[in-house]
Image (cartoon, rainbow, N blue to C red):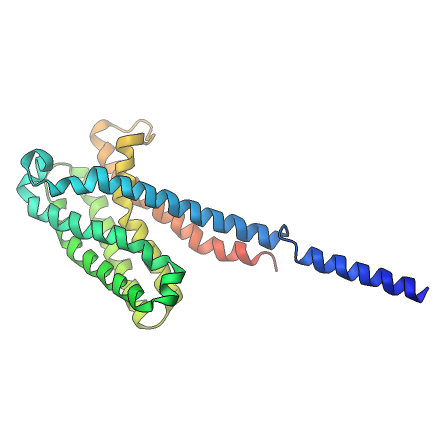
Length: 234
């Protein structure tokens, strides 16, 4: 009886250990879903970013009135915005690659400072472009958007200097999301966002709010809820 009891206990313990290490338990499933969501989001952002650069940003390297259209009078401001912002858009994903940050911290810091420099150069140019009298309802969302981008980017630098790297990462995510607002805005040209009964004269202003408010709200939800979901119930 004792041998049978010991054998039963050993089998029970083995089954319990195998079950605990199963890749299909709740924690592993949540981790996989979270990882797939992150990778999927990155794939879409990089894909749309590449399309945005090709179709909407790099065309301004052709320095002609036909390309610049209504911005020809402020072409230097537009160029001062497009070039550094494009560089920042390309370099920003490197800030979130763990392998680069751990193996080559100097590369991480260098690309980070280049990103900040590009943001610093492009923001004054955006303020100048906002004043182009083409859309009155576009001024408020542009001003708030640009100012918020400058604030979160500056806070990302401050947190890095203070060594508070978790907060640094969060503010860099916010900065990158706001930077991609122009990409989200251009998606309307190709997809056509359903904005209901918005008047044509007001559509541009509404789109400028949607282009950055919706992504930053989703980002705040992710930053707030993702750690709690990953921890699971107590």
